[in-house]
Image 1: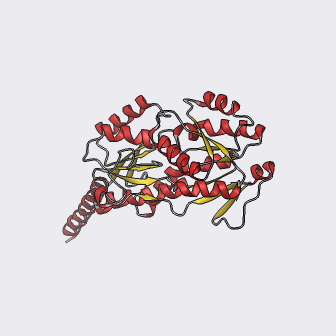
Image 2: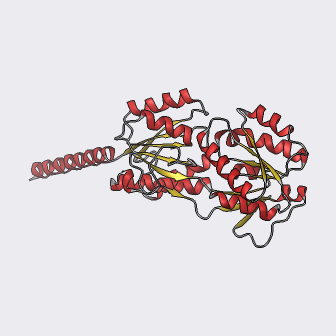
Image 3: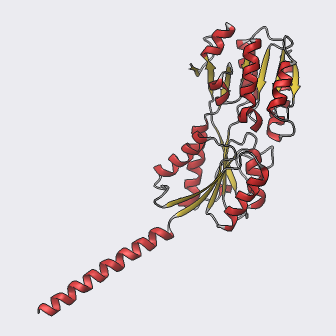
Length: 324
């Protein structure tokens, strides 16, 4: 009887061990691997993306492995990162910005879902067919803010403005689209527009310096130059000249630009994370998910910049958030 009990005990232990191994194997097979390429940074956006995953039970270090890549805006590095994701056969790629996403799209197989964010014009730049239907393996969020909001904000806060200068990186598709459309609407309002197309930060300074006393406001776009140090340089020049800046970037207003309607990067990162959850957990294809905007955008105002320039925000403007 004792021998029988011992045999049963051994059998139970063996079954528990086998069950444990099966559980581990199941957890391993149901885990996910995501390649994340942040182009030149954007930590708040990435945090939003990961928070959305975690709230749905996809947790880094548990059932999620993230392979990180940061190209610092270098196209060849981005190509190498995408090739690495391809070789490692990741389940999904999360990629930021228009140039970064374009490279990933070119290299990754069409069977791998790609979720993007901080892509201002995903359809116009050819990444997807439309917001409603991507037509391929991509889907994501845009930091686009309707052009009329920029123009209405500028003319409401600066009703006496006659001439403005728009800064955007030369040759970058998304910022060119933004600059062209803003220029058209501003001219309809009777303003003269000076189109400034610097290649780098030094050219931003040179062009801005040359506009001393010639413009009533600077306008920045959502391109990688403005987001990668160009707007900070423009702020330094504008503060000396006491010229207001209508910004397209949250970081720009935080750094000293005067005001701007902006998409919150954490929020659109979170929205992209929700799309990734649908793809990974519910096996929904990107063509079945709509790409999205952050609506309504925030109207960010830098209080110190406003005080320096002696400008006040009219009470009629809604959804305003002041930054000190």
